[in-house]
Amino acid sequence: MPTKNINGFPFVSYTKTTYTNNEMANRSQEFYDWMDTRRSVREFSDKPIDKEIIETILLTASTAPSGAHKQPWTFCVVEDPEIKKQIRLAAEKEEKDSYESRMTDEWLRDLLPLGTDWHKPFLEVAPYLIVVFKRSYEFEKDNRKHQNYYVTESCGIACGFLLAAIHNAGLVALTHTPSPMNFLSKILNRPANEKPFLLIPVGYPADECWVPDIARKNISEICVWI
Ligand code: IYR
Image 1 (cartoon, rainbow, N blue to C red):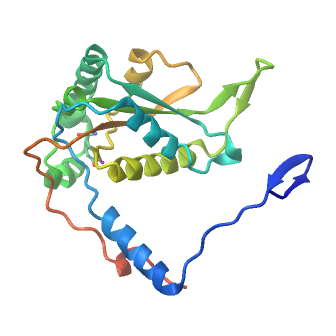
Image 2: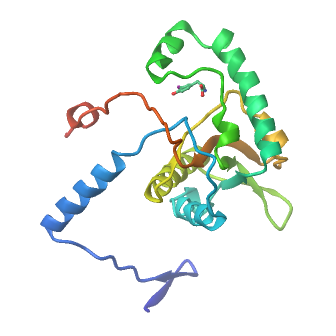
């Protein structure tokens, strides 16, 4: 394979399979149709899932681009029922406060179609909770802090890939953001350079599983051509 150096760093030649117009149209349509069947789910089965599947899904998430290729994320996978219980109790405490006094009337009204409230049983039922931490900086070998770049954007993209990989495996997930969520650093004993970003329960949907009957915006609502 051809190689070269830029700034003294190695580069490898990159090629990619391309398709005819027709194939592209079909592939894009099929991928869209498939992705459009993804739903955020709040009713999980407790059916177990092989750890290896979760690891492959996480490797897929970690193929996301990131600022200066720092890959500023840690995926903390919780399977211990005791820890899941602690997370549920702490999350429900914050959520109860939020629903009962912190959220505005407008916000509560906006959530009515989703049917959410402060009860979060899925935090104990789902076989795994993937807690995504963003790494604002690293302690390198010289023991000095090295800032990461575009950490929020990088982690957001990685979580998008993660949700797509979960969907592709035939599993379901919820992007859950209990607020505030500092309790996750404490319960999971994460170092100071990591901050909780997103809590993603993963599993099979419950045998009886309901999701809101809501629609996605159409192309003219999400796209402008200039
Ligand atoms: N974090 C709360 C409230 C909530 C907020 C938004 I924005 C949502 O899209 C859904 C829920 C909860 O998880 O219930």
